[in-house]
Image (cartoon, rainbow, N blue to C red; front, side, top):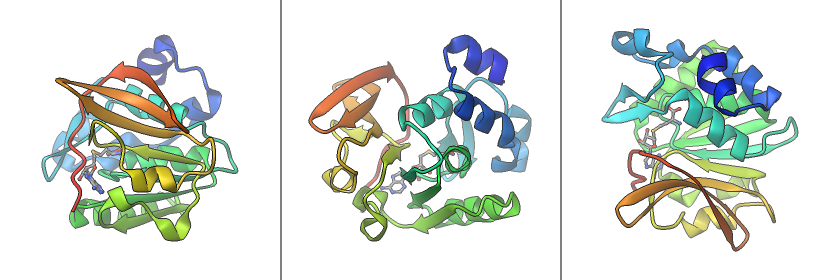
Length: 196
Ligand code: SAH
């Protein structure tokens, strides 16, 4: 997966590649789809949600500019896989999931793997985690309508990246927001970001 799906498609950051190589993706999938774990696409994880394609996870992790001293927020825990990859590249991760069952499942797998620098929370991630702000990066793994929630922007350290897919017209793009700037990275498909 690392060679074929990531390195050959331009992911070169050794910290991210090492994390992608280390985290056992199959452990984050329900038993019935486990054989699809290393497929080059998204895979269903229950509750109508999906785990992103490996390349997208690597790309989003990279855009968050990971480093061992970074404190990162993820909105949309889903399977917990993205949080696991971030946790191998950063100091710690707070991740929020609105489906309690998914969050609970993610929390127990992360604990089984001994990834103890991840705080899995249940709730509406569009409000962020003000008690743990400011963050060195925020990664949103569900698509926002036109722009990321303002509460998330307010919880970033100055100049820190907010990685978020947004819907613009008929299309969805993975974007990076920083200060007043926005950068369009690639067209994507994500499940919707649903606020309470
Ligand atoms: N990073 C995940 C991908 C999950 S898909 C992984 O690696 O598996 C996106 C997730 O965002 C879904 O589980 C969905 O339930 C969740 N979500 C959508 N809106 C949300 C919100 N407002 N707060 C928290 N989670 C949300």
